[in-house]
Length: 493
Image 1: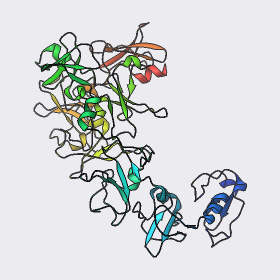
Image 2 (image 1 turned 45 degrees about the horizontal axis):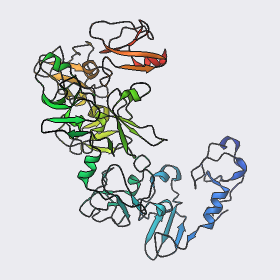
Image 3 (image 1 turned 90 degrees about the horizontal axis):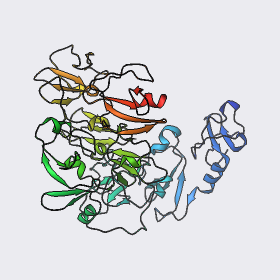
Image 4 (image 1 turned 180 degrees about the vertical axis):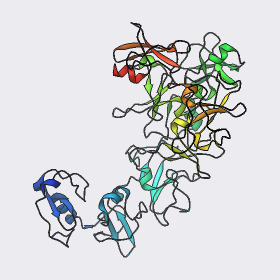
């Protein structure tokens, strides 16, 4: 028996079948060596010997940084809420400890209870998703407000992180704010805060420079740019934005009179350095794919390949990359495909949800162009999501591939449609499998130097899978006559 587990005798020998398959209930690490543990057969619980010893030596904490009185370890099942995070059982304990609440310390006279891990929460943090520093408090004011990450309410009397700016109502649960994908792990309490005018910061990292009233200069291009309007001409319709590689479909854009360089207004204003809620570190803008070994990249957010502008993380251990379309997203998201604002509910789920109706988007859907032009219809086709389509004519097929469309759960498909002409096409048929790669660009992959070409007229046979190349783009080897239908086929050759 131990002070931690007084009900049963603990064995020092674990059944061979359990070796390497049990976790210590104190530190949550795998028990790999048999002589280094204690085992309770009735409870089917394992402990490292040193963890049990360490816990016995820390049954009381005399001078905790979180409270003015001595804190006592509570070993029985309890229903006390942690003052730091507001939870009875911390997220990381919930699945493994079951009925055991082993990491709670308390001061009974003060009704103060706290998880052992929550004692060491950082006092001051800076997140990329908010412009101000956040301070930890054991009493969140106005607990009826919601956490700005998970959008769940605060437990009355619980702690959390609040904004250092008194005019800002930004609040986060302790455990939401310190998740490893959101927080960079730094307590900035002792670090001086950079106090600067927001306009100065914007100018410092701005990509655009105004030359005169009509002329602008973008750091990615050697010619000056002017604001142009889409005139509907054939050449204008083929023009693409160099940042996101999508067609220029807006009424006005920034264009070069000396060459075909063009940028959407929103893409042109993307800063050279930014903090984004999709990543915990600062991101730097790369505009030249010649600096990328393969000549293209895969966005870590939407997982699409792109040869446009790329935001990348400078941290050595981090390989995060993001394309221009995902970089333009923010929370809440105001999408033309839905009448209500959409909230980024959870980072891991990569999902935007509407709190007013059952509507949601992932980041791949959120970055799709709302309107596209198609040879099969005189009108622009509008993006519509299969689970929300109310279509009077069923069954129906895609106008391009002629495969029947599945609008019903769980097989529904996202579509582009013209409901005046009863035209529907699959998203991939309308914009292609690689909407952010452009014809004429060269990539290097698997020892091949590949030119990306339009597949409008020819339908070559893929060298790898031996099927007809059906997509809008085809990948042609520069040193031979072989072609590939996809990047996967290039890498598998």
